[in-house]
Length: 354
Image (tube, rainbow, N blue to C red; front, side):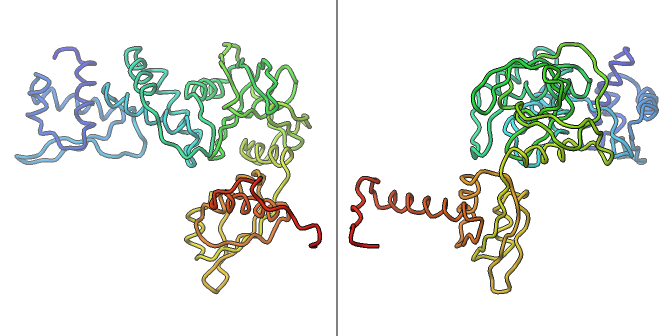
């Protein structure tokens, strides 16, 4: 192999396999002399790849971890496997899969040859994931388009469906994507509304990067609009970090009533914490084998009630009153369901009682 760049890429591909390669075997694979292999290894080192050599009759070369990660070289099967895995995780907003995963997917899909993009799409379309159903499914291409536009500071157009079903066309300057574990949100400056908005990504359709670049604006600190419909606010920059996650949290708190939970569980705190979403916080042991959760959230009553029941132990809701009332109604419905009775089967109330 006389083409030096092609030979270096082939050598790098071999060395990225987690094993030690004898110099003679590498020379045979690449059809060059051991001296050429030594020179090529030196070239890779100059490029930042930490290639370690061991001496002796069984010595050889292997790629080790360095201070920084150099570019990776993937074969077709490896690239497809990584792209499909990132798509599956990002598309279902699994807790712990954050913006970094979407950025990685966007970078990978940008450089995939068309033949591999076709294989990734075909495999994705031919598989049906088994998910918990806690959040909305998102087309990964929507996430990668928005992530690439936010990174490249490029304006985006898309169709948007608000919570009441209203459909509008938006043009925005994307700031960040934020995952809550259940859903993905886009924090962006809406050019038509001349204000900041947060958009649920599962309600975004046909996003299109316009090619128009923009200078980033300071992220507001207060009075953020949410879900594409809230009122805008002051144009003060977040002096601390410009944190889009904090901005989204403030926006969601304004749009939804806050629930102050006070719940006792008849199980150890470790057992309960492992079965509750992380954003609800950790329960405190009560010293008698149970634990108590005191926290605030903006989730719906229905979702909170179901998550508490899914902990799979005895529990008692001390507050808020609306949660207690909802659990009473839910418990009555579940009891009727277990007994095979419909609401109409209930005996009529005795007018002489109570």
